[in-house]
Amino acid sequence: MKKILSYGLLYLGLGATVFAQTISPAGSNPVPGISKDRIAKIDAMLDQAIQTDEVPGLVAMIVKDGKIVYHSAKGFADVGEGEKMEKNSIFRIASQTKAITSTAILMLYEEGKIQLDDPISKYIPEFANPQVLVSFRYADTTYTSKPSSKVITIRHLLTHTSGLGYGVIDGDERMKMIYHKAGVIDLFTTEKITIGESVKRLAKLPLHHEPGSKVTYSEGLDVLGYLVEIISGKPFDVFLKERIFDPLGMNDTRFYLNEAQGTRLVDVHTYQGGKWQEYPTTFYDPAYPKTGAKTFFSGGAGLSSTAEDYAKFLQMYLNGGVYNGVRLLSPVTIAMAMQNQVGDLWNWDRYYGLAFGVVNDRGVALGGMGTKGTFDWGGYFNTQYFADPNHKIIGLLFKQTSGAGKGDQTAWKFRQMVFSAVE
Image (cartoon, rainbow, N blue to C red):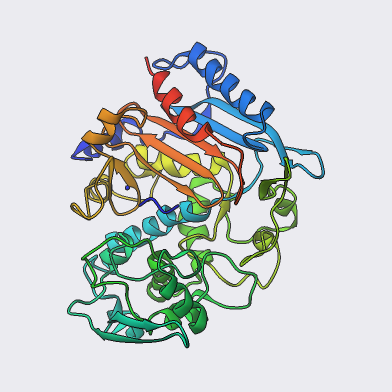
C-alpha cells in the first residue's frame, strides 16, 4: 500500500474495435495469445501456496481480450468456520478504491465541471492558506507551521503530491499524532462520521511539505470523494453507483454491504501461533463493510468488491473508456491520465499517472511486470491487480490478510507467470 504508479495515443484507435467488449467466459475454445499449459502451472502454484499455508484463501482471475481464461477460488474465506472461498467472495479492496475515485474525478473533468489544476480551496474553502509543518513537541503534541508558497490543486490530490498525510498509517509519527488529536478518520470506520466532516478537520492541519515538491501517500482521494459530492450534489456512494458501478455491472462493489452480500465477505486473517486466525479489532473493526454507522464513504480506501467486478472496471480502461456500449471516459482522457504526472518525484520501475502506477522502461527491463504501459495497484488487505494494454491482459489476485504472515510469495509469482503465459 505504501508503494505509489506511457500511454501515448494508443487508446485513440480502440473505440471502434472494442466498443461492445465486456468480460465474458472463454468457453470451450482456447483464447489465442495465451498458453493453456502455462495457465495450468499458475493454478498449480496457487494450489501449493494454499497447501503450504502461505495464504488462507484467494481468488485469482486472468482475462485476455475480454475473455476470462482463468478464474479460481482456493482455500478458505473463514478459516475458523471452515467456510470455503468462492469465486464471488467479496473482499475489502482498500486502496484499489483510489482508481475508482480518480475515475469519478476524470468524469467530472470531461464534463467541464473542474480543471485539474484548480485549487481545491475553490470548492472546499477550508483548504485556503495551507501551512507546512515546521516543528513538533511530543510532550503535548503542539506544533509550529509556516505558510505554504503554493496552493493544493486537484492534480496534487490525485498524485499524492499535495503534502497531506495518512494519519494512522503515516510514516511520520508526528503526523499520526496530529491527525489523531484532530479527529481525522483514516481508511475505515464504523463511527458515525461523513467524509465531509473528516476532510474539513484535515484541511486545518499542517502539510508534510509544499504541494508538488514530494510524493507522500495521503488521504487526497478522500478529499476528492468529498469534492465529487460538492460538484455533483449527490452522496459519493450514490454517484459511484449511478455513474460507474451500474453501467459496468459492478453489482457487488459498495462501501457498505447488504445482508446477502455480507455473508460473502471474506474474513481478514493473520498468521499467529502456527495457524491462520481471524484478525482482531485494532484501530479499525474488520467488520466495517457490514456493520456500524455506514456513513463514511472513503474515496481512498473504503470499497469492497469481487475479482470479477474489478476486472470489469479495468476492462473499461483497456477498451479506451467504454464497456458494454456505455462510454465512461474518452480515450483522450485515458491517454492523458496514463502519462507521468509526477516527473522524477516517484519514478523507479513505475511512475504515477492520475489513477494508477504505470510500468516504465526500467520496469520492463527488470522483468515480471509486463510491457511498458501496464498499469497496476493494490490494497491494504493483500489484493493486487494489473492490466497490460498491449496484450489486453488483466490479472487479479485477491486475498485478505494483515499483520503477521507466512512468507506469501503469490503476488510476484502470479504476475510474472501470467506474462510468461503470453504467446
